[in-house]
Length: 54
Figure 1 (cartoon, rainbow, N blue to C red):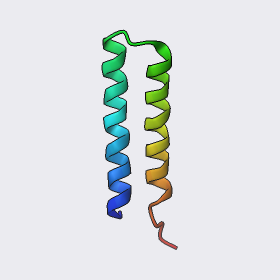
Figure 2: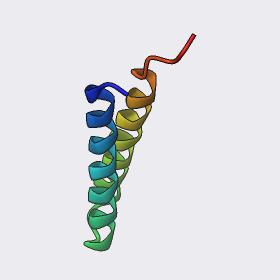
Figure 3: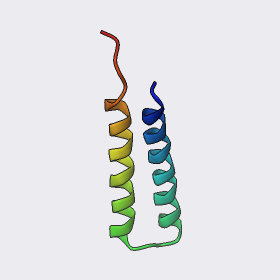
């Protein structure tokens, strides 16, 4: 796995943790949803950047 895929996957995990923290702090719903969407996009991007074996 290339370093940028690992970095994107780590970013997605950090964003998911941030979304959970925002939920616990009772942040507005739109902020929580935005964090979850960004986390999902980072995780999806990580899997799309993995060079799959032919």
